[in-house]
Image 1 (tube, helix red, strand yellow):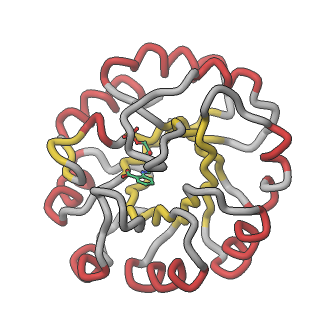
Image 2: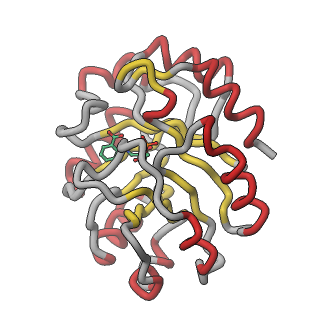
Length: 208
Ligand SMILES: O=C(O)c1ccccc1NCC(=O)[C@H](O)[C@H](O)COP(=O)(O)O
Protein backbone atom coordinates (compact mmCIF):
# COMPACT_ATOMS: atom_id res chain seq x y z
CA UNK A 1 0.00 0.00 0.00
CA UNK A 2 1.21 3.52 -0.78
CA UNK A 3 0.53 6.64 1.29
CA UNK A 4 -0.15 10.22 0.24
CA UNK A 5 -0.43 12.86 2.96
CA UNK A 6 -2.15 15.89 1.49
CA UNK A 7 -2.53 19.57 2.33
CA UNK A 8 0.67 20.44 4.18
CA UNK A 9 2.18 23.91 4.51
CA UNK A 10 4.60 24.04 7.44
CA UNK A 11 8.27 23.33 6.87
CA UNK A 12 8.78 21.80 10.33
CA UNK A 13 5.65 19.69 10.02
CA UNK A 14 6.79 18.37 6.62
CA UNK A 15 10.27 17.60 7.97
CA UNK A 16 8.63 15.69 10.86
CA UNK A 17 6.50 13.75 8.38
CA UNK A 18 9.54 12.78 6.33
CA UNK A 19 11.59 11.66 9.31
CA UNK A 20 8.82 9.72 11.11
CA UNK A 21 6.65 8.36 8.28
CA UNK A 22 8.38 8.96 4.94
CA UNK A 23 5.19 8.66 2.84
CA UNK A 24 5.23 8.01 -0.89
CA UNK A 25 3.77 11.44 -1.68
CA UNK A 26 3.09 14.75 0.08
CA UNK A 27 0.42 17.03 -1.39
CA UNK A 28 0.56 20.83 -1.72
CA UNK A 29 -2.69 22.64 -2.49
CA UNK A 30 -2.54 25.26 -5.25
CA UNK A 31 -6.20 26.24 -4.98
CA UNK A 32 -6.61 29.71 -3.52
CA UNK A 33 -10.01 29.03 -1.92
CA UNK A 34 -8.62 26.17 0.19
CA UNK A 35 -7.58 26.79 3.83
CA UNK A 36 -4.51 24.71 2.92
CA UNK A 37 -3.46 26.91 0.00
CA UNK A 38 0.32 27.34 -0.35
CA UNK A 39 1.65 30.67 -1.56
CA UNK A 40 4.68 30.89 -3.81
CA UNK A 41 6.78 32.28 -0.91
CA UNK A 42 6.66 28.85 0.70
CA UNK A 43 8.64 27.29 -2.16
CA UNK A 44 12.16 28.19 -1.03
CA UNK A 45 11.79 26.51 2.35
CA UNK A 46 10.64 23.14 1.02
CA UNK A 47 11.88 22.93 -2.57
CA UNK A 48 14.84 20.70 -1.75
CA UNK A 49 13.20 18.41 0.80
CA UNK A 50 13.57 14.75 -0.08
CA UNK A 51 9.93 13.78 -0.71
CA UNK A 52 7.76 13.40 -3.83
CA UNK A 53 5.67 16.56 -3.94
CA UNK A 54 2.22 16.43 -5.50
CA UNK A 55 0.80 19.72 -6.76
CA UNK A 56 -2.99 19.72 -6.35
CA UNK A 57 -4.75 21.96 -8.92
CA UNK A 58 -8.41 22.77 -9.53
CA UNK A 59 -9.42 23.84 -13.05
CA UNK A 60 -6.32 25.94 -13.61
CA UNK A 61 -4.19 26.52 -16.73
CA UNK A 62 -0.97 24.94 -17.93
CA UNK A 63 1.06 28.08 -17.33
CA UNK A 64 0.21 28.08 -13.59
CA UNK A 65 1.03 24.41 -13.34
CA UNK A 66 4.40 24.90 -15.06
CA UNK A 67 5.27 27.81 -12.74
CA UNK A 68 4.49 25.70 -9.67
CA UNK A 69 6.53 22.79 -11.04
CA UNK A 70 9.65 24.89 -11.37
CA UNK A 71 9.17 26.78 -8.08
CA UNK A 72 8.41 23.74 -5.94
CA UNK A 73 10.17 20.98 -7.89
CA UNK A 74 6.93 18.98 -8.17
CA UNK A 75 7.04 15.26 -8.97
CA UNK A 76 3.32 14.69 -9.56
CA UNK A 77 0.35 16.74 -10.81
CA UNK A 78 -3.06 16.09 -9.28
CA UNK A 79 -5.95 17.44 -11.36
CA UNK A 80 -8.75 17.81 -8.84
CA UNK A 81 -11.44 19.68 -10.78
CA UNK A 82 -13.43 19.09 -13.96
CA UNK A 83 -10.36 18.97 -16.20
CA UNK A 84 -11.10 17.63 -19.70
CA UNK A 85 -9.32 14.73 -21.39
CA UNK A 86 -7.62 17.23 -23.76
CA UNK A 87 -6.30 19.29 -20.87
CA UNK A 88 -5.13 16.18 -19.01
CA UNK A 89 -3.32 15.03 -22.17
CA UNK A 90 -1.60 18.44 -22.51
CA UNK A 91 -0.47 18.37 -18.88
CA UNK A 92 0.95 14.86 -19.31
CA UNK A 93 2.65 15.64 -22.64
CA UNK A 94 4.02 19.06 -21.73
CA UNK A 95 5.26 18.23 -18.24
CA UNK A 96 6.15 14.53 -18.56
CA UNK A 97 5.29 14.18 -14.87
CA UNK A 98 3.21 11.60 -13.05
CA UNK A 99 -0.52 12.46 -13.23
CA UNK A 100 -3.30 11.79 -10.72
CA UNK A 101 -6.76 12.52 -12.15
CA UNK A 102 -9.38 12.89 -9.46
CA UNK A 103 -13.01 11.88 -9.78
CA UNK A 104 -15.30 13.22 -7.10
CA UNK A 105 -17.97 10.69 -6.28
CA UNK A 106 -21.60 11.56 -5.55
CA UNK A 107 -23.95 8.59 -5.76
CA UNK A 108 -22.33 6.84 -8.70
CA UNK A 109 -19.43 6.82 -11.16
CA UNK A 110 -19.91 6.56 -14.91
CA UNK A 111 -16.87 4.38 -15.65
CA UNK A 112 -17.18 5.10 -19.40
CA UNK A 113 -16.32 8.74 -18.66
CA UNK A 114 -12.93 7.67 -17.29
CA UNK A 115 -11.94 5.51 -20.23
CA UNK A 116 -10.52 8.24 -22.47
CA UNK A 117 -8.32 9.54 -19.62
CA UNK A 118 -6.52 6.20 -19.29
CA UNK A 119 -3.54 6.94 -21.64
CA UNK A 120 -2.66 10.21 -19.86
CA UNK A 121 -3.10 9.25 -16.23
CA UNK A 122 -0.81 7.25 -13.93
CA UNK A 123 -3.34 6.84 -11.14
CA UNK A 124 -6.98 7.72 -10.68
CA UNK A 125 -7.93 9.10 -7.28
CA UNK A 126 -11.47 8.78 -5.95
CA UNK A 127 -12.58 11.44 -3.49
CA UNK A 128 -15.92 12.51 -2.03
CA UNK A 129 -17.88 15.12 -4.00
CA UNK A 130 -18.02 18.51 -2.30
CA UNK A 131 -18.44 21.98 -3.72
CA UNK A 132 -15.12 22.95 -2.09
CA UNK A 133 -13.54 20.16 -4.22
CA UNK A 134 -11.49 18.49 -1.45
CA UNK A 135 -10.49 18.30 2.19
CA UNK A 136 -14.09 17.70 3.29
CA UNK A 137 -13.37 14.88 5.75
CA UNK A 138 -16.39 13.05 4.32
CA UNK A 139 -16.46 9.53 2.91
CA UNK A 140 -18.46 8.32 -0.10
CA UNK A 141 -20.02 4.90 -0.63
CA UNK A 142 -16.87 2.81 -1.21
CA UNK A 143 -18.95 -0.16 -2.44
CA UNK A 144 -19.16 1.69 -5.78
CA UNK A 145 -15.46 0.91 -6.30
CA UNK A 146 -16.14 -2.81 -6.40
CA UNK A 147 -17.32 -2.41 -10.00
CA UNK A 148 -14.13 -0.54 -11.05
CA UNK A 149 -13.47 -2.02 -14.49
CA UNK A 150 -9.88 -0.97 -15.33
CA UNK A 151 -6.39 -2.28 -14.59
CA UNK A 152 -5.18 1.26 -13.92
CA UNK A 153 -4.24 1.55 -10.22
CA UNK A 154 -6.04 4.09 -8.04
CA UNK A 155 -5.92 5.82 -4.66
CA UNK A 156 -8.79 6.00 -2.18
CA UNK A 157 -9.49 9.39 -0.62
CA UNK A 158 -12.12 11.36 1.28
CA UNK A 159 -12.58 11.17 5.03
CA UNK A 160 -9.99 8.45 5.70
CA UNK A 161 -9.37 8.27 9.44
CA UNK A 162 -8.53 6.02 12.39
CA UNK A 163 -12.25 5.19 12.55
CA UNK A 164 -12.51 3.52 9.13
CA UNK A 165 -9.28 1.49 9.04
CA UNK A 166 -11.12 -1.85 9.01
CA UNK A 167 -13.23 -0.81 6.02
CA UNK A 168 -10.10 0.34 4.19
CA UNK A 169 -8.39 -3.00 4.88
CA UNK A 170 -11.43 -4.92 3.65
CA UNK A 171 -11.60 -2.90 0.44
CA UNK A 172 -7.86 -3.37 -0.05
CA UNK A 173 -8.25 -7.15 0.14
CA UNK A 174 -11.10 -7.08 -2.39
CA UNK A 175 -9.77 -4.67 -5.03
CA UNK A 176 -6.16 -5.19 -6.21
CA UNK A 177 -6.13 -1.92 -8.17
CA UNK A 178 -6.51 -0.03 -4.89
CA UNK A 179 -2.81 0.64 -4.37
CA UNK A 180 -2.83 3.70 -2.16
CA UNK A 181 -4.60 5.88 0.38
CA UNK A 182 -4.74 9.66 0.56
CA UNK A 183 -5.23 11.24 3.99
CA UNK A 184 -5.83 14.82 4.98
CA UNK A 185 -8.23 16.67 7.29
CA UNK A 186 -8.88 13.81 9.74
CA UNK A 187 -5.22 13.99 10.77
CA UNK A 188 -5.03 17.74 11.30
CA UNK A 189 -4.38 19.86 14.35
CA UNK A 190 -5.46 22.82 12.20
CA UNK A 191 -5.86 23.21 8.42
CA UNK A 192 -2.48 22.42 6.83
CA UNK A 193 -0.83 21.16 10.03
CA UNK A 194 -0.78 17.41 10.62
CA UNK A 195 -0.62 15.27 13.78
CA UNK A 196 2.29 13.04 12.80
CA UNK A 197 1.77 10.54 15.66
CA UNK A 198 -1.83 10.05 14.55
CA UNK A 199 -0.66 9.43 10.97
CA UNK A 200 1.83 6.90 12.39
CA UNK A 201 -0.96 5.06 14.21
CA UNK A 202 -2.99 4.90 10.98
CA UNK A 203 -0.09 3.86 8.79
CA UNK A 204 1.06 1.10 11.15
CA UNK A 205 -2.28 -0.65 10.51
CA UNK A 206 -2.94 0.19 6.87
CA UNK A 207 0.46 -0.41 5.29
CA UNK A 208 1.04 -3.92 3.84
O1 LIG B 1 -7.55 19.77 1.00
C1 LIG B 1 -8.04 20.74 0.44
O2 LIG B 1 -8.25 21.80 1.04
C2 LIG B 1 -8.39 20.67 -1.02
C3 LIG B 1 -9.05 21.74 -1.58
C4 LIG B 1 -9.36 21.73 -2.93
C5 LIG B 1 -9.03 20.66 -3.71
C6 LIG B 1 -8.38 19.56 -3.16
C7 LIG B 1 -8.06 19.55 -1.81
N1 LIG B 1 -7.47 18.44 -1.24
C8 LIG B 1 -7.02 17.36 -2.05
C9 LIG B 1 -6.82 16.02 -1.49
O3 LIG B 1 -6.23 15.21 -2.17
C10 LIG B 1 -7.40 15.63 -0.14
O4 LIG B 1 -6.50 14.77 0.48
C11 LIG B 1 -8.74 14.92 -0.36
O5 LIG B 1 -9.68 15.86 -0.79
C12 LIG B 1 -9.28 14.22 0.92
O6 LIG B 1 -9.41 15.10 1.98
P1 LIG B 1 -10.11 14.63 3.35
O7 LIG B 1 -11.53 14.28 3.05
O8 LIG B 1 -9.97 15.78 4.25
O9 LIG B 1 -9.36 13.44 3.84
